[in-house]
Amino acid sequence: MLSQADRTYSRKTIKAKKVIEEFEQTHNHSWYEEIFDRNKDFLDDPALFYRGNTISYRAMFDMMQTLASAMQQYGVVKGSEIPVCMSNTPELVYVMGAASMLGAIINVFSVTFPLDYIKEIVNGCDSRVGFFEDNCFSQIYAALEDTKLEQYILYSLGDSLTSNTDRESVIGQGFKDFKSSVDSLTSRFSKAKGYYDFLRKGEGQKPILDHKVTLEDDFTVTYTSGSTNEKRPKAIVQRVRSFCDIGRFHDPDLTYGLKMKKYRWMSIIPPHSNTNLISCISDCFMQGSLLTLEPIYDASFFLESLLHNRPNIIIATRSFWLTAMKKYQTDSKYKEIKMPFLFMVFAAGEELSLNEEKFLNGVLRKASAGRDFLHLPISPVCFCVGGGDCEHGSILHRLFRAITNFSFSPSSEQRYGMTPFDFVEVAVLDENGNRLGPNRTGRLVADSPCTMRCYKNDPIATEAFFVKDSSGRTWGDMSVYGYMDKKGKVYMRNRIMGSGQKIPVFKIADEVLKTKSILSCEVVYTNGKYIAHVEYLPGTNSDKNDLSAAKNRCEKAFGKDVSDKLLFRIHSNSESFKLTGSGKRDVKALIAEGVEQAFSV
Image (cartoon, helix red, strand yellow):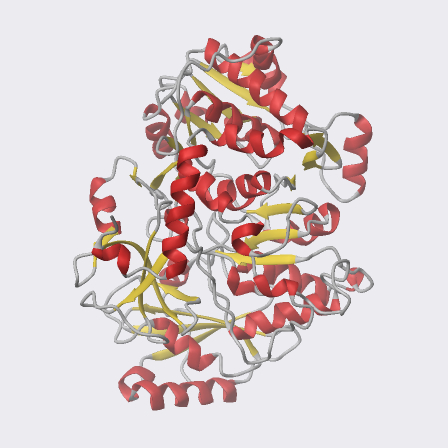
């Protein structure tokens, strides 16, 4: 019997609930079992691509089973929580699959976290073993030596390069060599053991799976981008269903989109982000595609990685895309290089301004993006489709249906919103919790079976995340401003941060960005002032007359009290904006800068 709340759902949502119910009845098992069942008839197809080395589904699943057997001998059981500090490499994928087989939980954190926080994270896990990339281990050992860990399992970025030829061909593409320090570390530290030495514990054996893993079991602990607290980002607990349900709703029979098996996927997202684990690693295997792994997380290296790895589907942050495309446009050595392999391009985590979206699409059209798949020399790209919030497991990330329309070309004035999955309900609330109608900006909230279970060890933050609207219904708070159009597409704006400002800062940025020569604008409120940090389009000189016009528009839109508090700060293309560890613009750094370099017009 449907509840009154259920009756308010759209027909699509009710249909989606039936799909979920059917999925739970026949697929109520581990993530490993789900991706194995989906690919068991294609075991010799490529699953992983790493620096020129291709690994089949068969080899990947064999490695996961061997690793799971080794883990069991070190006491890993269902519910064990394993600390993981690894890069985007095949070894990370193997750990993820092995833990899933056993019903264990992986706690994936970053080497950039403060040492005291890392120690707290590791001591909050109950596994005897932890997995670390050797360079990460060297940086964080001081935090690990007094923890409960009995064994540090170490690997190097070059371990999955099968021969010197692989390594030499990669270096020839401009990649630096990955020199292993595993042997020296294992000789120095009695608790350290090489990853592949550890694997030998499980060789020739299969793990004993005498337990039942369900969709409701916890699977991963990942971390927020640190927008509210970069030094101690909150830990997000996601269940198995966050991975499996989303994978089901990417299937062509539900999306009416393309079959994704032939495509090569890649993400330039930190491993400790849920977006990376779900929207790239998991979704790729759910569709039987080829996962390309890139361990170097550096905006200045992103373009080189694109050209070497040649992904068809790629997820990265707005700032990474802007850095790469500015480099492509301005550096003469890329003048004759085209990128016809880029078919689906997503910017995750942040909203793009219309000016940024137009710039990126323009550069990609010049690069013949998508030409391998489309007859017309256009860029089948809509940057604002990607993204979402990691607390919801990227529930808003969905393939853009218009890519199958060969007449599609982004309009110079049109914005394209994100399409929620059919099993997700999204609403926009005002400050009193009332639901707002189409095209009215407010607080975005969502409700989904894949919403996170909680913030680990943080009941206060968990309680704050789950909010009630004026009718008493509970939602997950995205903590961003946004709106929905009449078709239900979602448009995200800035995060809801700070206090004391008369109006949301993104509205001031909207007025500034009406100046077409300005590529980017990030407005912060500090010291009683609105500081508009602007960056001009490459090749365009800054013009204070443009800024005066922008200030006049703000005065007309918001009043003289606001425009009198408006200052400007110009960033050069080479300086651009500082980024957080998750690749987003570091708004806190802009706030901390204060008014020192800002000026009035």
